[in-house]
Length: 468
Image 1: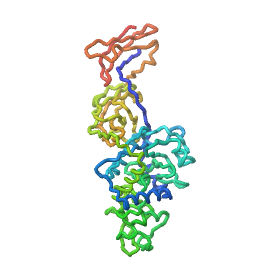
Image 2 (image 1 turned 120 degrees about the vertical axis):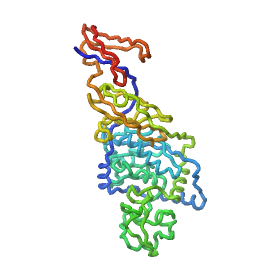
Image 3 (image 1 turned 90 degrees about the vertical axis):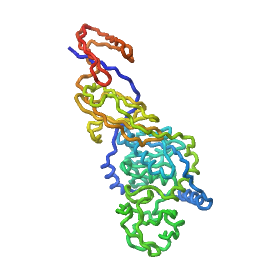
Image 4 (image 1 turned 120 degrees about the horizontal axis):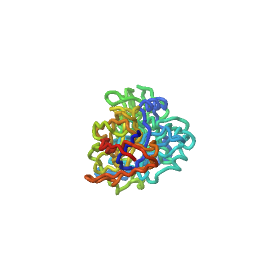
């Protein structure tokens, strides 16, 4: 005798994103790439910086700290021809949150453009630093009037493998996925270049400063001499002669003693996003840098959206179905449902075999535009853990919901293997509380069957033996 099991389901539309960015891959990439920025501060960028500094200093521009500037951004997740080696969409949402955390002090907030996060750009050459990465890729695929950032497997500036770079010719940012993980500030750094900022050690690129050596007279001094004409040309960032990656000490400074032209010894500060201090040292930008970026934004004009309606998400979803600890969830037709917090328009859903949600045990990790989902990719008699994170185009910083747990049963809901069964339907659909359920079954041969009816959370409602 064959078992025929039925479940009541709600159909949802969703799109699924696969892939995880591993911290170990990030470490290896940064080691091989030298963790360098590949931005070349050319004449175009020098002209923009000149203009911005002139407006700041000669025209008396004052940054408005009482209002917010909203800037659209598109994150392009580039993959190989077959769609492999692509950065995770859900991880990209977290990186956008981290970008906004650093730019918060500038009163600048990035929100997802009309293209949002695009994960349909599959070209192996572009993804691995081959022909077209710095040019054709962005000319053919870009969102107008927005910041365009491309996350690739390997970023190549010229012929050098780097962590990321801004290219003024295309006016886009390209970041290697290996330098786009937790606590990485590569995108924050390259966005600074996008808004005209040079490195704090500008003029020292490619040179190796010998610690404890006094530099030539025409360099920025600790007391501010030449601060408007040498280095990064900002007087509140301090001199910096280190053009190689360095780790800050317990005081947040370099351990390499510098000596300025006047013989004054100092240690460069590691907090500035445009320096080459390691990521965990970095906290943001100086006041003058922030003002220069605001001038650049105002001059760009088309990037600013004065009508954007920013709405934060204040609460986390509550997981409802399956009920916590359910032990009879259909493994091949599991239905998941959670509450919809105010202002949430989309959700990240993760189903994992590990209670700590380890990357190696991910079953499904996807983005949804609805607060329900059904899956047929689970195994029978297995315990799973799941959680949900809400977001909208302007707010991607929500925390995960509380962890949910359920266990699948061993019964298959599908009917495709039942010989003689042509089809079935349940009426009414949806069902009405207190009313009878009518089950119509079409058979092309006589058969005695067991029919079991389950609720969407896996509870057995009724079981009957039927002669059909």
